[in-house]
Length: 116
Image 1 (cartoon, helix red, strand yellow):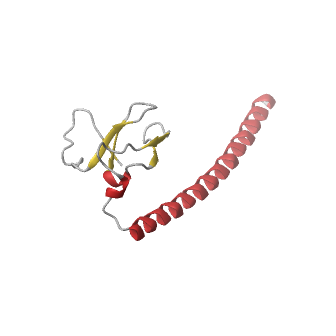
Image 2: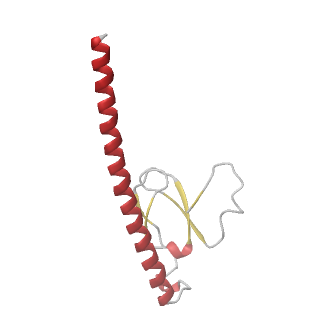
């Protein structure tokens, strides 16, 4: 997803077929390819779930992808989502381990200062 930069030359980044809209939660300008119409995405700034608007006059059936291609993309997205969820869980475990290690280090430092 591209971002709209205030005051920057964006014509090379934003195509006529892109959907430009604001996050309803934080107001961030968002840009997505027209094939994202109707999808639920996360805002690149606040992370909130955002429904990509369907432009006036456009029907979801107007998308130029064959149903098989859409299914392939859907399955790939689901696989990527599952991989991301696994990575998040691994990172959370590492964070907990690091926080515990910092706690032990702080305790050792505190005990060392108390003895001195």
